[in-house]
Length: 161
Figure 1 (tube, rainbow, N blue to C red):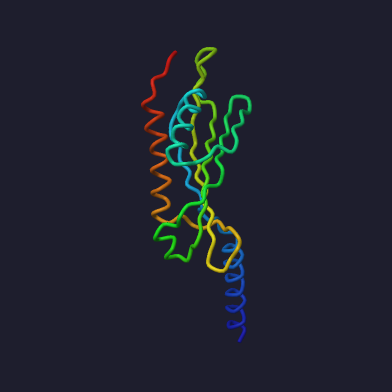
Figure 2 (figure 1 turned 90 degrees about the vertical axis):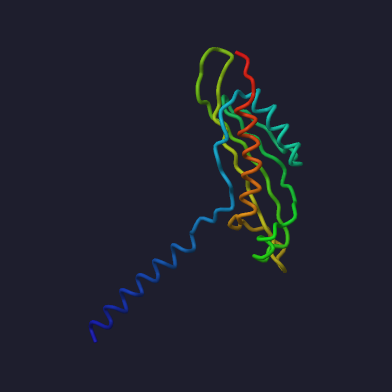
C-alpha cells in the first residue's frame, strides 16, 4: 500500500509540473530573421519599396540613437488554405524592422544589422478577439518571401562611401 501511495504522489507531482509548463508555452506567431546589413539611408529606401510592393502602410519610424525601429500598420488579409483548415476566419499581419549598429568606419558611414519580424494574429469562428497562433506553412512561406525581398535588395544595393 505504501508503494502505491508513493507512486501516486510521484505521478501527481509529474502531472502538476507538466500542467504548469504547458500553460506558459511560447506560441510561435512571429516570423523573425536577419535580412542583412546596410546604412540607415539604404534601409529607409528599401523598406519603402518593399512595403509598397506588399501593400503595407507605415505606422511609425523611430530612431533611438544609432538604432532604427520601423513598424507597419496591421494589414487585414485573407486566410491561407491551411489557416482556413485550422478554423481561422480572419487574419491580420504587420511587419517590424529593427536595426542595431554593426560596424562604424568613418564619420558618415554606419552599417546596421537588420532584423525582420512579421507578426500574425487570427480570429476563429464565433470569436470576436484576435489571437496569436502558430504560423502555418503557407503563412511562413508568405513572410519568408517578403523577408527574401529585403535580403535581395539589401545585398544588391550600391553603397556610396
